[in-house]
Image (tube, rainbow, N blue to C red; front, side, top):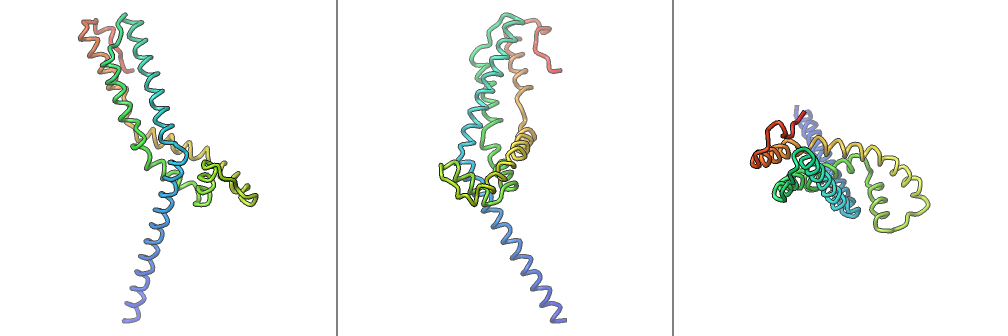
Length: 182
């Protein structure tokens, strides 16, 4: 009976040390993935693209309103629309999930190869094949990242429509001219 308890305790200690080691390994992978994201400037590029997309959306709204009811959207409405997109698509909302996608799809060596690439460091010939294999994972990482962003963003369309329609109502525009979600 004593031996059975000792064996159970040893098994529990082994399981606990394995779990601890794997969580340390995962923490290292996340740390390295976050470093890769910083080195590549992905966050600032993401926010720049989100800002460009926001500007295009606002231009489209303004054009639709102007064409349909000959009214120019005021800057206050445009600013409110932009605020929603800035909050919804802030990099900080997505960075932890994107880092996890990188950590889940790339080995520490592959992350290191990419960090070296972005720091303009060369690769020894022995790493060229590993680098090529790393690049083959880009499509899967991109696809997973897009899906993650889509699944973890609330969008602003309904709020945008409400803002625009409230403004149109304040201008005594016939409600048949309001923007409809279909």
